[in-house]
Length: 140
Image (cartoon, rainbow, N blue to C red; front, side):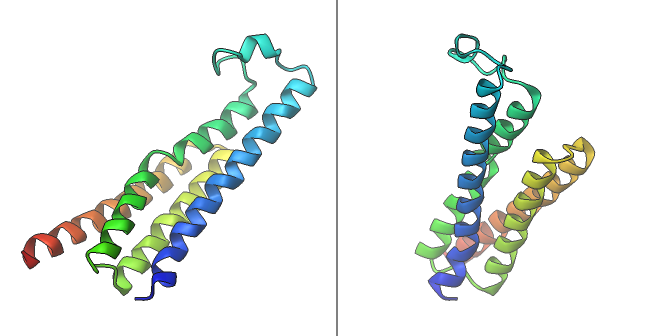
């Protein structure tokens, strides 16, 4: 597989992270501007933010949980030349699950739907790691 094909899902995941960062900033500034929260109340923590701000911030923070394992795996797969078509397809499935998860989290925030999508994405990532580990261990 080409490096571009392997890294395309990574670029989309990184793009999602930046979109959520800007959304978080926008919702935080809007909350302060609207007087929903005072600067002194949020200077040392997150608890005083309104629910909408917390919802977007939590979605942003989620991008530094399971996606970190995805980034590490992609780097290792490139270095060890284990990134084939199956790897790229699974990468797209994982990133698609992350996109849907972020969409649900920032819109309806339906916890059951969000959990199911999270679980699906995590299962794909676990499968990717298992396939990678088996291939590496078998190849010696």
